[in-house]
Image (cartoon, rainbow, N blue to C red; front, side):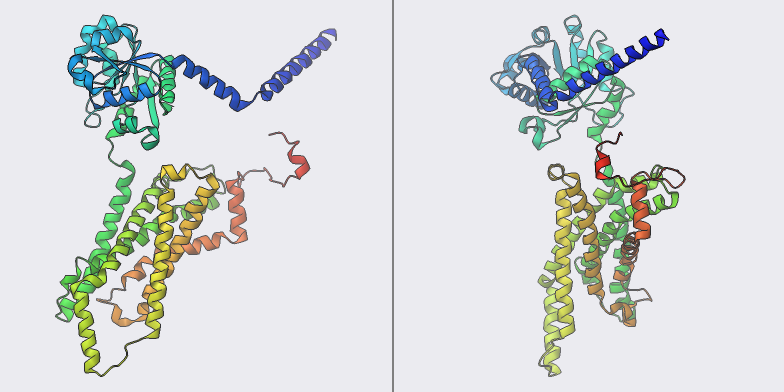
Amino acid sequence: MLYNNMYICAELYTVQYIVCMVKSEMAKPLLGSENDESAASRALLCGDTIGILGTGDFARSLAARLLYSGFKVVVGSRNPKRNAALFPADAEVTGQEEAVKRAQLLFVAIFREHYSTLCALSDALSGKTLIDVSNNLEINVSRESNAEYLASLFPQCTVVKAFNVVSAWALQAGPKDGNNQVLICSDSPAARSHVASIGRSMGFIPVDMGALCAAREVENIPLRLLPLWRMPCALALGLFLFFYLYNFVRAVLHPYLMENKNKFYKLPVELMNVTVPCVSYVMLSLVYAPGVLAAVYQLHNGTKYKRFPSWLDEWMIHRKQLGLVSFFLAALHAIYSLCLPMRRSARYQIINDAAKQVKNNVTSAWVEEEVWRMEIYVSLGIIALGILSLLAVSSLPSVGNSLNWKEFTFIQSKLGFAALVVGTLHTLTFGWRRAFDGSRYKFYLPPTFTLTLVLPFVIILARIIFLLPCFNTKLRKIRRGWEKDSCVKFTAMAPSEEGSSIV
């Protein structure tokens, strides 16, 4: 019994001690402690001597950025006298051996094939930290990464892969004008932390990529040519070819075969102006189609914790690129439309129509319905292009980072869907009654705009259905963690109970 009482007292004392410690820690200002720690880190780094082996463009930009950040820079060159004038005056350009002796941390800013020239400095480099900033000319050109190859040549050194995704321009102009992330990997956690502190002092955001074996993937990043744009561009090209050939059959081939009229002059401009908006409209629809499919998938499974199919994941990842391609094609459509009256064929057509009116003694060709149709059609097109422009601007990292999550979601989701609706109205105004005119069906093929309306109509109809309470309430519960087969019940909490609840 006494033992139990002593045990209970000891437990109570421990709990009280922990509570006191938590209160004391919570009393400290979070931002202040973080700033003090970062300030101390900068104080330790400021004035350190950093070496650079190499005298190329990247080495010169790196030296300038290090000097601006408060470091001392010593550059190791095979020909110091010739290359000294290429560097800032505050950077000391000397021989490679002298630079290795004076710096504990050195940037290796030379190509892989020249690593062997440093073998003569093997003894001087012993115990040093080498930062490999090199890149290859092709992806996976070697079995091992450049950093791993450098580590095999100098096993007595600590090798860090970093700064290879940062361009020389970003170093010169500052991280705010270029890529602001520095990917870092090394087998030494202390070396990664040290290089991260240097990158942070230079104004960059360090990203720890783990061990040195990740250097192969890090070195492939700068060599990838728009990896997220391949699928959207290929899709846009496929849609363009389909709609262009479809319009060619209807607008050029049909008059040539059935009426013996040569209308091949329409190929460069008029046919392009009919095809480009079709592709843009369908691409914009494809931006919001995966959201509808994801909602259907969640409603069917009754949970948000079951992964989407891989093809749907890939589709959702490429939505930004799909939207930007749609905006680009919409801008082309606007330019083509402005150029239509400038064509010689359009001028001849106006003269021919005027001559026919004079011959038929027609004093006025004014058609009230057509006037209103074109006015509304053009106005809706301008509004749609304006909303797409706002979406494109907000997708830029420099603009998107200045928006909070609610603002960004409102622009990309609400205004984006509004652009789809306005684009649909724009297309419907263009079609007007043509969908019901039998003479518009060339070779029994419907007008092009009727094909483009199918997918947007499905998406808009699905979004309207999801707004119904029976679907909207369930979908919101699922996205807040509710599951169909779970017995957990969600109840509204009173305001007085929210503060006392324990999470």
